[in-house]
Amino acid sequence: MAVITGDFPTGPYQATYAVAGLNSGAATTLGLMEGPIRHQQNVIALPIYATLWGRHIIDYVFQGGGVFVIATVKEWDAGAKAFMWQYNAAMGIYPIVGELLNPYFGQIVLTALAGTPAATKGPATRTYPLSGLLPGHNLDITFGPTERNVPVLMCCLPEQNSSTVGSAKYYTDT
Image (cartoon, rainbow, N blue to C red; front, side, top):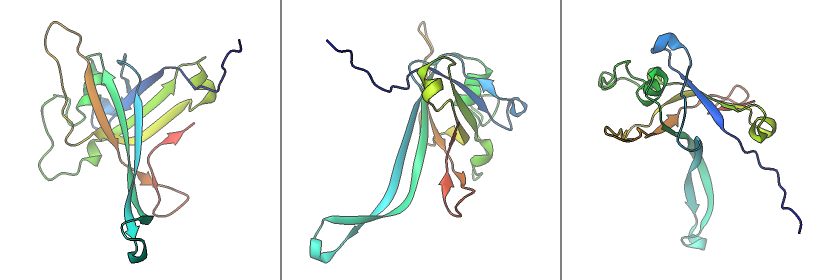
């Protein structure tokens, strides 16, 4: 019987998070996570219809996209708290109503564990320069005689892509 082989970039990633206004902007490790760190990405586009084709979509006009990072935090230290609540070193203190959120967003860096297929096949590192708690995401923090696993959904904001004006860049791989 033949062994099934493939090109699978498996392996754990370590995560760090840095916010300019917290911890002097120093990157702090997020420690242990429950399960893998997940990357989600979508495309936003307006469908084009033509009378000849009725309700068939004949094309789309690209209008943007979204990038998200999902992780379940296990530890309860400064790095994990900053990842869950980047607005203030004291959790529960919100920004002033009407402020933009991007100044509170920080950089997530995922680094593949050395010696794993993920480190060899890549990305060895993925950097999201502007990430913060997704507005509307409910932090679900358990207080009781059980593990404190907190699912966190981060949205990533784009930077200007240096090679094409008007093109958004959400992350960089190395």
